[in-house]
Image (tube, rainbow, N blue to C red):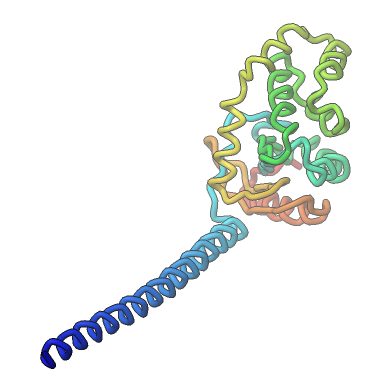
Length: 251
């Protein structure tokens, strides 16, 4: 009988020990899970930092795609902007800085300026505005609409205002309206967004500046945000100087 009690005691003791070890193991696994989550977060941060650093060091080959161009197609320097019509910083660039770049460089055949769409997901009116501008481009009025949309942020998705402006330009409003309703350039805009993300863009405006090359791409430095004219001037002048040394810059 005493042997039975001893056996029962041993079994109970063993169960208690197993339960204790399992509890300890579960606790260790939870800690390891937390550690893995922390390491994963750090790795994502490092990856993001490396992407940003890569962009800032100008290690990207950036495509001009088939997007609208302002200025001489063969100008020695190319400036590519990824922009959003609803972005206030983009609007500030177009109101304050771009006119100076146009006067100093674009109008003189020194810079080719390319506009690529990058409507941010939380700017709900930016994508419709981009559609309208691209549709206006079918009738040779892309830059008119580009200016109109930046100057009138309250009318980005105002169909009547857009039609009224198109009429003032002598455009075929039925063709424009049909193009917008059918979202004809949705794929084109999404392609710009996809490219921008691949280049590490996370906000607007974002710029890539480099020497114009044969083909559809440039090796560019990355300029983030609505920077003062002097920042653009410094980079553009450097690339112009490099081109001049090779005899490719207009006087």
